[in-house]
Length: 112
Image 1 (cartoon, helix red, strand yellow):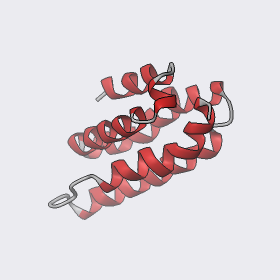
Image 2: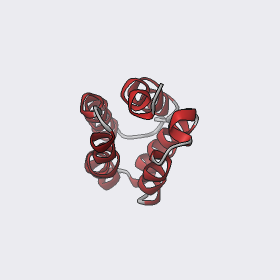
Image 3: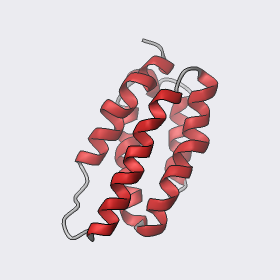
Image 4: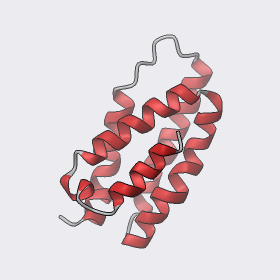
């Protein structure tokens, strides 16, 4: 499976959903959890835009940071935990960890 197909089919199902499930939301105010849910939903919707290398690069470098901005403003620590988890799980996918998308994910992580 090439990296674009991997991103398209596993990004949400593995990276995003697992990162979300691993978050400790105990003690997080309900309004922040609602923001997190909205942001995660928007990120899940990005899957349909991953159709080529160029579109995948755009998702990683432009669309993801845009979506995460609102969560980062509301709760920087929660945003960082989510992004760290998401990057960790994406890098577990061999097709991604052995591609240039690794550096895009690390770039995303360095913004937090």
